[in-house]
Length: 376
Ligand code: ADP
Image (cartoon, rainbow, N blue to C red; front, side, top):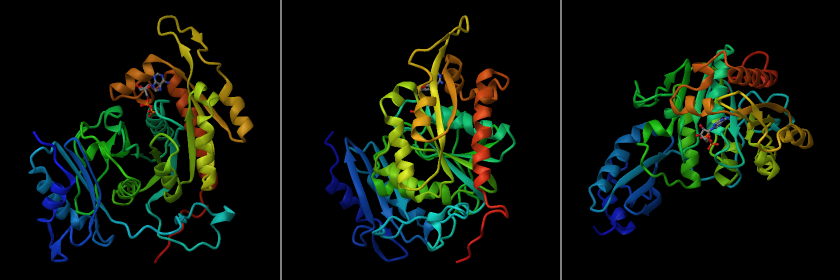
């Protein structure tokens, strides 16, 4: 079958009328970021931020119009509800940065997620170091320690939280505006993986990444949370930098393996947050040493202990070390992370100890009288 072309997609989208504005979405210049690759089509539709989820029927109609074209195997349309990109990246004063001199004198903006006391990013210099496994176990460990916790899977290139946390189904909306987060093991979870089928290839451009993330932060009914853990996309490219800049982060945790510490990838992650004035709470060394599943013997595969030294050199804290252990992999693959499936194991205790340090650091930065409410 002949492959679908960009022209054909645009032509099809000319039949989609925005009822609010009385013209088609192409002539209204609402279409952006169109990518067509081997029958997989992705694009975003820019709408006025005030309309938000009300524009959903337009998005749906656009998807349907493209789906009907011959040669199309998947369509992903997202609403982007942002204004023209500001010349200077904006910094959002989220109210928990009091005492951080660099926020003073800046214009205050409405906090993105009003009921959430603190947002903590979990990042890594590159993929495959166990960032998502660590995010899931850290979030569950914070909950086990008594905090009210949410987990946002911002790893939109490869969302893994639905599988890791054993959650299936789609989030619902009671009011047509905000999505209810999914829940398991006592934490609230949102992931692109709930919204898009797992086999849909995702092609994202920077602005689309940001608006998807902003919607997952702002248009989700997170309720009252002590901490929202954000599993960041791996790496330190533009998308990650923008995210670090525009999401009101209380701090960041860097996950790293011993060998990538040696290769300086962790340093890149650390510098990215420093560049945008986000405090780095410290480094977690994952796959730090190998635990033999048969005899429990401990082998230092890569020169273990490097992270502690490197953290010192970099002027940040070493938060703890997690072994390379088959149980950690198996439990997350089964959707039952070790912190909840084997709460008395040594590994679960390590995650809880790290969670305690992270929470101590978060609470040290929280304003005493609760988050400031900014009325616009
Ligand atoms: P990332 O999010 O950095 O890409 P993942 O968390 O998806 O990495 O982990 C990559 C793979 O490594 C997964 O199969 C995961 O189960 C496994 N893994 C992560 N941490 C550990 C660990 N400490 N011990 C054993 N396997 C691990």
